[in-house]
Amino acid sequence: MNPQAEELNDIIRKKSIPVFDLLSERGKNIFFPKKGILGQTAEAKGTKINATIGAAIEDDGSPMRLEALASKVDLDPSLVFPYAPSFGRPDIRAKWKSMIYSKNPSLQKREISLPVVTNALTHGISMAGYLFVDPGDEVIVPSLFWGNYNLTLVNAYGARFNKFNLFKKGGVDLEALEETLNEGKPGKKLIILNFPNNPSGYTPTQAETESIVSILNESAEKGNKIAAIIDDAYFGLVYEKGIAKESIFAPLSNLHKNVLAVKVDGATKEDYVWGFRTGFVTYAIKGGDAELYNALESKTAGAIRGNISNAPNISQSLLYNAFNSNDYSLQKQAKYQTMLSRYEAVKEALQTKKYQKYFQALPFNSGYFMCIQLAEGLKGEEVRQLLIKNYSIGTISLNNILRIAFSAVAAKDIKEMFEGIYKACKACS
Ligand SMILES: Cc1ncc(COP(=O)(O)O)c(C=O)c1O
Image 1 (tube, rainbow, N blue to C red):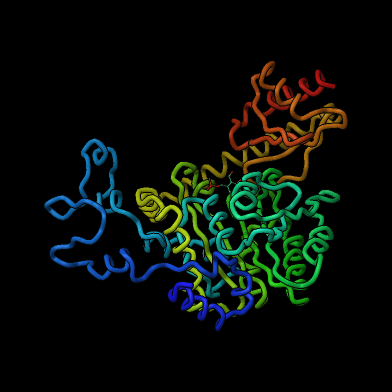
Image 2: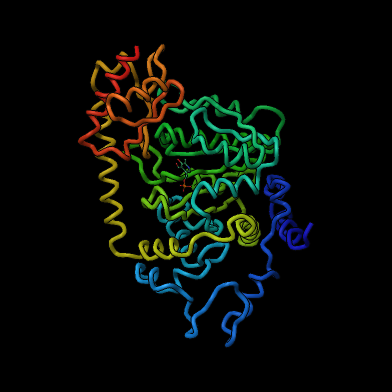
């Protein structure tokens, strides 16, 4: 093992044996090379003649660039063209951290890591897989989950999914979660918590969130060491009262010495910048301190360095500027209102009695999506294809469930969409 990895492992082991035990073999081996090209380049910063980094510089010292590109971007070239660090730009890391605190007031001043920038959330999940999943490790997911966890965790790192039933009586099936988490002998447990959930669009109520937290706490008390990978892709898009407004990262951040909270979040869906590819990974554990978090950040940045090297500088700079703009909050609020109006239009359309013969909504209250469960005998794929062919309506079929991204449908078109779905179901039945 590289001595720099050993150095990080020694710190982690000294600070938290559970965190060390949660690391995969890859996670144990990885480190951010302090003494490599990046380290030597950092040491040469500010020199008069700097011949370190593999980037080109104009004679005036600014980044070499083509005017055809520079003329399109209204930012200082130094914020756009050079590499960003593998850890991410320091300014946006600090800003996102302060935003995590303000979005989750119950965190108060509790110590959490500095977010490490990823190439958006998919990459954050992948890096969590790199650090925590060994081939054959079980990852607990709800019965309805984002399909790309298959590629990021099963195909890439050899995870095996252990699914728990997500819904019972209109809410979270807490018993199923508890049973699945406590299956087998106490040991390493990996679980993905994704709320608002893709595909269902469900976020647990405040009371359900508290129950989930105490299920994790009791499981940790039994000796399980749990890494909770919290996929907060749709954070902030909650449309009902009584639903958890904060990320479950907040209560998990100092729950138990056996529970490591790994928050994967980013601007993609929250700030409507799907193509920017800016996300973050942030850690917290009860009793965690800067030394432990620095070691985890270094391992994360090392995994990133060996994978995509670093995330786009231009996206981080644009977002950092937006986050500091006076209009940011107002503009975000306006987009939330648009999403809310679509959600309300879905709820209103679903009041139509005749629909019940063919489909029923699964619980939903947040995010971009909702799902309808088709009546027995109807085939989702058949309905989906007819919807495209005869009604020009696109949906996603998941066996006999249709996922509807109401985020992408104008409120005025939502009634027509459900009428089309009704007619297609009728034709298929
Ligand atoms: C639950 C969930 N996580 C992560 C992502 C991916 O986000 P990103 O585009 O930032 O990689 C998605 C996108 O569909 C998602 O639904």
